[in-house]
Length: 296
Image 1 (cartoon, rainbow, N blue to C red):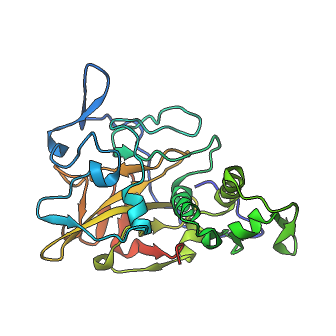
Image 2: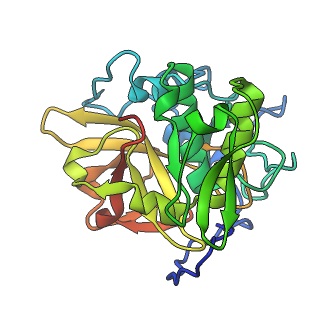
């Protein structure tokens, strides 16, 4: 992810997360009206009429969705609006992403017209939106790559971030203002100076058996990559399965990923993963699973 790293240079180990834009889509069929319909391998899992994760994605046979407290972040994600089934992933400039073969749904989420909202940024946005819409604005805060904590409370009170040879600090520039434009301007600032590098520092490792909605598989770097757990279900034997969502570069719409290792599902079953998680455009180790505490 392209980010401006402030005041110092951080050595990073690049990872191989190739955007395979030239892959052809063999997993959907096109109707005479131009809409996409699920192919045989996913028709038992996907309900094209569903407008949310909860209503569009059926769980695998023998599984039930993990409980999610009403009003929780998990509940927020499950009922976040999705665009119409078959919608293409759009880039920040309004163009369609070339490779449309790796997703099963597109979030109806604001993207912006700048090449800023990439992988980590999409996850920061959805957490920020949850806290903003549930009147927990004082919890909205993200670290820059250089360690500076940029919180929405300061921003809404008219403070702005200034950079100098002596460090990064808040400086009073205006009066209190809390509206959608203020919120979006704040997020743009965060997207400019935060990345997978800072997200790794803000998270902690967890065991795959404890996986929850909102957890992330992450490789910090420049570029790095991160995907978010968008839903979780489990069976009577304790096996769990999950859906993954990602943004990507250049900045593009947040979307639910297919499972390239499965022939009949977009769910990733823990019992079938082993030590390595293979996503459509990046591979992670199970040890890359982490939890962010943005809601605490």
